[in-house]
Length: 85
Image 1 (cartoon, rainbow, N blue to C red):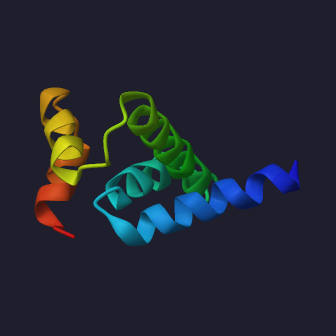
Image 2: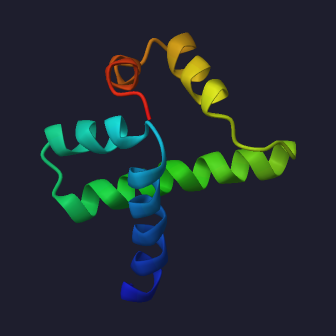
């Protein structure tokens, strides 16, 4: 189990440093998850994004991500608006 957590946690940690996805991390922490669980949840989110980019053969776009949040009326959008990367 530890072998699969390390790469996933690394992806999540990189996601924390890279973009507006820290709002997702913060929402996980607000739900009571500890740091490691929140980073793993963020990593799973990034894995879904990477898989989608691979399937559609399109590069990741922060603009598309934020537009997707707007369409879904996500509460994460408020965090992204107040904390530009």
